[in-house]
Length: 593
Image 1 (cartoon, rainbow, N blue to C red):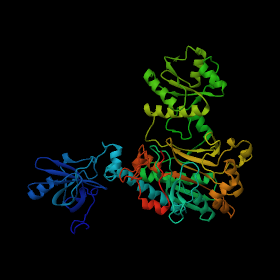
Image 2: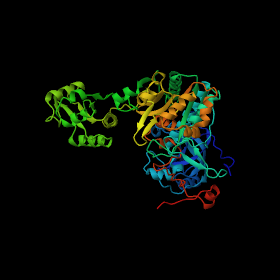
Image 3: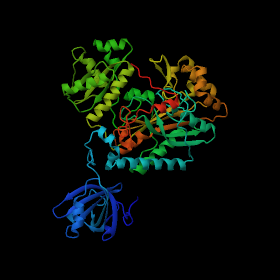
Image 4: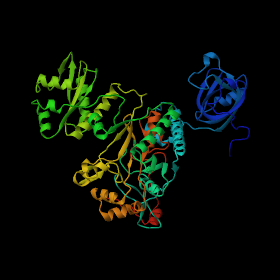
């Protein structure tokens, strides 16, 4: 049954204003709040558009009043009545509808709610596990509804933008060939072709390249992707990308389109302006200055190299590292000191978790450098180190000695922690930056071979082609990442559009001809059929919406997320299946002892 005749709503719960005074209305929604003020009964009625206060008066209708007094929280009701202005001292400036109320003349209970496992309120006091188990209740909370409505709005802006730019939205398959490179595939067994499997796509990478070969020139898609990998706050086994590909382009063409899309998105969803052109920074500069390829540029605190100065000391921690080819680098926390022993111990433990062996601190007190290493390092060397940082009274220096990657990880993470802990981040500021000139390859100790920094279809820079055989680790990629406030939100590249170069890439990656043909033969053949130069980018859409919403986890902007152990607590998946289903697929479960 639908809504009974005569109870169709005339207005939403976020719609009424002063101009509606005296109008007869019908509202429907959930009982968000129920207050008895001794003779007057107030009910806050909620739907996704907002809240309207409804007042029940015993002198108007005693039967109606008694019925309203029995209303349970989160029951679904309908209310008929006239709109009235609230008394001046009762106006609620926090609500758009806060200057009016509906004086009830009729009440319909569509569905009475049982007592819920937690209150529908912000902030929510329930544990995350309880919220996920009853996600359909958690989604009633105003903050969750705002997040998902923001996500909807963002997707409409993105679609409209790309449509106006001449892009074609094309859906690519969810059932595809398994080509594991990087994260594990989710496999789907075929009932018709026993012993064979589809894979759920980790991205539509090969398909969007094929669409360029097909001549569509400009493609985009807001698409679901799947990766069977270890999870954390910003990862989910299923996630969403804004996928983009363009033909006959160079890097600047892709970056320019993306910048305009980002400006439009932030303007139309948040009313905020992003300045163009975005900053651009090489991978090497980003690692040198910030210790990461995802720098948060809302604060400075650049990493400074003091290897040359510090190596002059007899302090063995420094001298031994330098002899082994390592570096001594540090950051300056400006005007915050002095720090307590406990604070320094906490920061030391933090960098050790990032791989550093320890942390050296130098605190500037009344113009003097005070440090636990002062007994091993001359005053002259300490002063020279402080001069390299332009340190003054109240500053604290943090030094890490070790291999370059250790220094980068430890100081990059510490830099972010210090900024958050000491309030150095302006949360209203937006600083996007392009990171470019990535290494094409990186050596994997675990695999004993080179692996692709982005993916194996990324094109090397033309001027570095001569290094592919002699020094592959020095080859730069035609790749680019977009970073916003320390979070990577998009990554892409110009692709290899000729078979010979793609085959050469596979060889360097240790993928022999037979394996390459088996995994990617269809793409290789397509590259011989008039493939245009092309490139593109993919946005982590969940992360982008997370930043728009000001949340810390993508699970707050996904309707039905999984836990960090990839479980859906609401519907209890993954779950066992019937033996007959397995038999149909030619499968059986083997339990290892």
